[in-house]
Image 1 (spheres, rainbow, N blue to C red):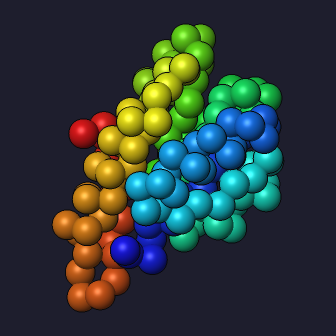
Image 2 (image 1 turned 90 degrees about the vertical axis):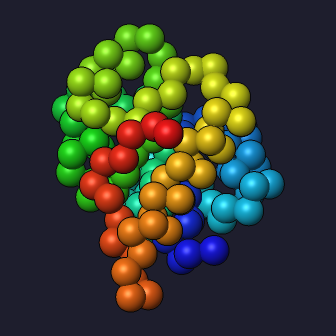
Length: 132
C-alpha cells in the first residue's frame, strides 16, 4: 500500500465517521477521522483524499475553501442542494445516502490513479481526478 493511501474522513456525526472508516478499512485502507475541518487539515495534505460530509460546512465560502484551498482531493458527501454547487467545481461528489460499495469504488479509482502516477518512488498526486 502506498503511504498516500491514507484516507481522511471529516463528518460531524460520530456514527457516520465510524461507518465510513470501517467500510474503507475492510478494503485495506488506513483512515483518520475528524469532527472538524481544521483538525483534519494537516493529515489531509498527506492523504490520498479527504472525504467531507457537507453537514460540516457552514457556508458556501467554506465549501469553496475545501474544494480549492486544501491542496488535496476531496470526495464530498452531499444532499441534493449542495450537489449542484460542488459539481460545478469539478469535485468528486457522492449524493447521500451512499453505499459502502460506491465509496470504495471511488477510493479504489483514486488509489489506482496515484499508483499509475507514481514516479521514482514518490507519488505525484493528480489535482482533480473524476469518478471512475
